[in-house]
Structure formats: structure tokens, C-alpha cells
Length: 183
Length: 280
Image (cartoon, rainbow over all chains, first blue to last red; front, side):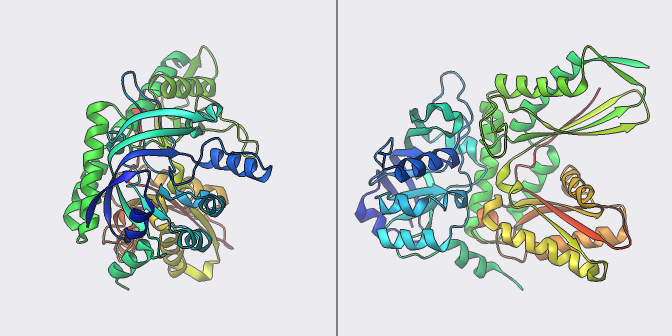
């Protein structure tokens, strides 16, 4: 099923999405990867507020290459999500609605997805030039000193992703590998 | 003795960093093309066509193929009759990486200390491997390596008794564990023999051999063919979303080893197996 979804992700959309669904996202998403997650984690441990309100938002695990003049962003494909697994359950419990990345997640992350009715999407790894065409605006909103790892607010249009883990905890990677495995 | 100025080295390195990050070599393009014909999964086919489109956009619009423009791995074969003038060769190479990554709008992905983790801001230093060879030329290969796939690479210190079956299991284990994380379809570089670090370096060099080429050693060619076939039966597929094209190539390099050992290194590269080679 191909569907167009508006971002931020509504609760209804999050719960209605099934693993294997192709969707295109349009609206606002935020980027954060390793270093920004570490800082957010440290802020939470010190009872400090996060630099952006993540409630109901979706985080794209991505650190872009620099934008050339006149363009919103450089190459902008997903990074491996498992490096954020240590931090993701806490953010999901704080209301994070979605994550976009690539690769497998831990059981702890899946449990937190189910507990909170969230979604994990995958974008095509290594297609950073193609995906950059779906980003129409990018601005750094926190941790500027982290360079490519700063938190960015992106406006995307028809950004293509596939639902890999749905709100029921079903995992497309596990199912699809089984389907094509031959020995 | 032939003299080559360090400025020439720097200029070439800078251009090569940019070239490698925007254009794949013809063998890799062909391998992706062939993959589309072999894939049976509809999702897999769709991803492969997106990857082809991505390559076209990267070249036409000068956007890096992947946002992870890598840590610069540089292989340098220096002719023993060459004299570098105007400064150290390593400094000239790092200056070229700095220039290429800054002027070419490539991502700076290197941190100065693995634990303190502060970005160096210019993607230096490079990882440089030198080799001294006969002649008066310098051959430089730049292979920017992304870490989605680098993180999934492995080394196994097998016992000689484990033999070829042990080697096959090691490679299949590494690829299966890598799964979707390594951005399949992948290229699998395997180094067998030598010492711990020699095997690792061989596995990296194996990634440079053109996709679709084979080892000159008949038993190693047979191993490459079998491994490619078995990897493509694992079901991982393009993007890890299921399919028959999990690897585009398996390249194996070997080296003599110790009577007590059988080192096997598996260096996994994503479909963006970038490299650029020049001889100066």
C-alpha cells in the first residue's frame, strides 16, 4: 500500500500503518544522530529540558553532507539506527512518534515502539542524493557546534520510506529475509 | 631519480576525493545494472532502481552518492626511484584530503580522538597504506569508506583444522549479521592468511578489485563463486528488505600464513563501493 502521510505524524496514522507499507512523508521532521542523542541523553539525566520538544515528532537519523550554494542540503540518506538504540526507548517514552533510519533495532526499542504506539521507518541506505531532492528546507535548531551531527529541522516533500517496525511490533526485516532465504 | 612535488600529490588527492564520492567506477555501475535483472523481489527491484536513479542524480547534480563520504583510505605505491620534493608525502596527502573534503562539499566525518570524539572539521587524517615498489611512478588509490558497512566488518582467527569450511562459515556469518545495516547489496572483501593485521588489510584491498573479476588462483575463484551464490541465498536482499541480490561481488585475497593460524578478515562495503585510482 502506498500512502501519503503528513508530518508531524498523527496518532491515528501511526497506529494505522502496517509493516511493509510504502509511504511518502511531507511536512516537518528533525534530524539527530549519535552525538546529538548523547547530548539529549545527558540533558535528560541532569533533568534539563531537551533543545526541541520531541513530543509527537519524528527523528531522522541522518547527518548531511554540506549544501552547495542555492540548495537546502547536501546528500542526505539514513544512517544505521542501531547506534541510537541505547537512547531511543527513553525518547519514545517522552512522546517521540517516529524514527527514520536503516537497519535492525533491539528488542528494547521494539518494546518501546509498541508501548507508545510509535513507528520505525527505513529510508533507502546509500541513496543520499535521491533523498536530498525531497528535502525543501533545512535549518540547524540545536547543537550547532556538532557540525553534521547538529539537530536540524527539515521540511520534506514526498520523502519515500517503508514501515519496518509498526506500532504492533511487527518487523519487516525479519519477515522479508525469511521469505527469500533459500537454505 | 624522478622528482615529484608534494603540491602535485595534494592537487590529485583533492580531485580524487571529489571524484570518488560522485561517480562509481564502471564495474560497480555494471554490477548494479546486472543486479536489477537478477532480483526477483518487487521491493528489491524498486530499491535497485532507486539506487540507479541516485547514481544519476549524484553525477548530474554534483551531490555525493551517499552523505557518508567516508574516512579517506589511501593506498600509495611509491616507486623507489621517486623523490618527493616540497614536504612530507603524508602531509601532502592529508592536505589533499582537507582540500577535497572542504572545497568539494563532502561531509567531515572524522573525530580526533576515538573516546573524546571532537570532529576535526576537515576529515583528516586519512588512513594511509604505503608500499614501496620498483620504478619511478606513484600509484594512488583513494577509497573513501563509510562506516555503516565498516562497522559490520569482522576478523576471525580460525584454527588451521577449520579449513575452507571454517572460512565459508566466517564469511556467511559476517554477512548475515551485517544484514540491512550494511546497506546491501554489498561488496564483500575477504582477506585470508598473513597475520591479524595483514588479513584485515587484504580484505580492504580486496574491495578495490573490480566487481565481476576473479582470483587467478583456481581454488580461490571457486571459493568466490560459491560464497557469492550462498550469500545471495541468505534472503537479505537490497536494502535488507528481502531478495536474492544481497552481494554484488565477493573478492578474496590470500597471503602466506603461519603453521598455527588461519586468519580470515571480512571487510564489508555497501553498494557505494567507491574508489579512484591515478598514477603519477
